[in-house]
Length: 370
Image 1 (cartoon, one colour):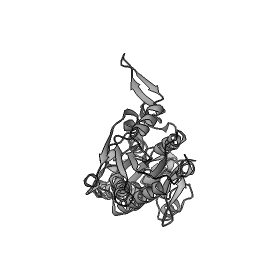
Image 2 (cartoon, rainbow, N blue to C red):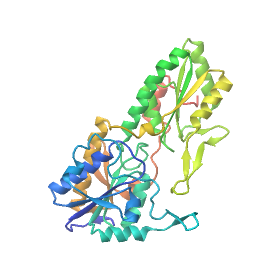
Image 3 (cartoon, rainbow, N blue to C red):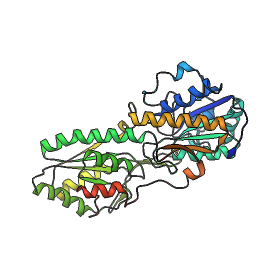
Image 4 (cartoon, helix red, strand yellow):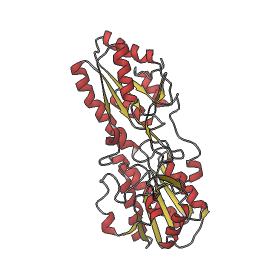
């Protein structure tokens, strides 16, 4: 439901969808506190994302519930990336799994709980579901969350800066052990089909080679870089590779497929493959580190705490003003509202000529395509 509705909002629901990340609790706090104190709303926390909306799990939130959670990682409400109401996994009596349309159950619970509006905090998948829920008649406001930073419509998503900080610190630490043992260190980072984490984290950590999905690389370029560094007396190299990067000859590495998810591909393994190829073909001792869910955990950075708070406060204002079918967004230095439709029109990936790519090349970092 897009457009503006000035009906009084007395009961507001909040849910967190998709993967967890630092800053979710900061948003919950920033939505709930002004909703309670400035607008007199009753706030309902829906548990485990859209799973809770479908299965009817919620709890009332009070001031004490949302106090002292600004710096806490994860989400007090729980989350799930397997709860798409239109692609909902249910176990049959014989133990097999079937995928069903459970959207009417979500709508029934929204109505049964007497919700006037729902704030959905999540990434691309969450915003796609939010748009469809709006089409069923729910009053929806979105808040953009993803460590991958692949959501169009906002310059940055909260959670991304915290993930980049983890990658940067990891590369800093790997530098010391790589130089001590004269090894090549490959670090695999998250990001799915977008290379923002690898690019920003690799650049900040001083990686020698950065491999991302948006820029096709050649093995010879990678081998040449590590060999040339060794010949110049730099007897170690750091390679930062994004999990969704396609390798010449084999494509994207998919660890497994989970049909409970709307996107069933579970990525992982590209770091091992790149490390093995470097060791076999460049004849350099190589080790691999997969950061995995370390990038999602822990306390948010100061930047993410501020961004999440600004997003949450804006979302609450949008609810009060009846700006439904829209998402809070960062544009330049301002927090604005944009149509959810615009935010999910396309995936935001790294342009090959992005300023950060040019900066990386200028300081001698290889993108694997030279």
